[in-house]
Image (cartoon, rainbow, N blue to C red; front, side, top):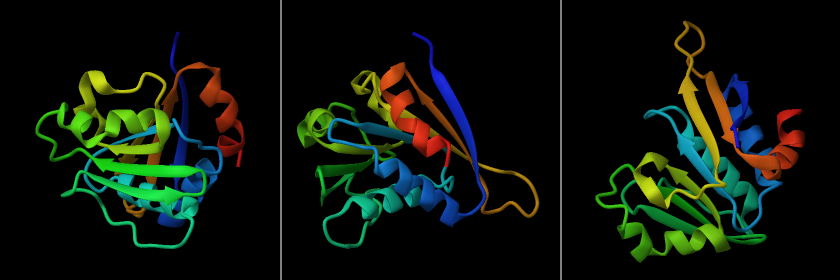
Length: 161
C-alpha cells in the first residue's frame, strides 16, 4: 500500500495551534501521531496545543524531554506525550508501558525515529520543517503522511479547513 500525503503551510504559532485543535477533535484511543522535524521546528508547540484541547481540565503541558513521557487524562481516555530525543534504548519504552499505550491511549511521539521496530504501522506522521525565508521565521511547513483509508477519511475535515 502506498503512502498518502498532504502538505500545509502554517503561517504562525496560532495557525499551528488551530490545526492541532482541529486534528485533536478526530482522535480516539489507539491513535498514534509521530512528530518529526528538527529542534525548534514546532513539534512540542503542536503537541502542547493538541493535548490542552483534549484535557478534562486545564493544566500545564511541559515538554517531556527529560522525563521521556508525560501522561494526561483526556476526555476520551489517556494521552501519552513522549519525547524520545534522549532515549538510550528503544526497549526502555516497553518497560515504561508506551507500547501498551499505542493500543489504549492517544500517543504523541516526538523524535519517532528512535522507536525503530516498535513504530506502530498505522501511525500518522507529521513532519515539521522551518521555512528558510526572510520574514518567515514563524512559518512552518507540515508534511502529513499516512497509509490506508482510516486516516484519509478522518483527515478530510482537518485538511479542508
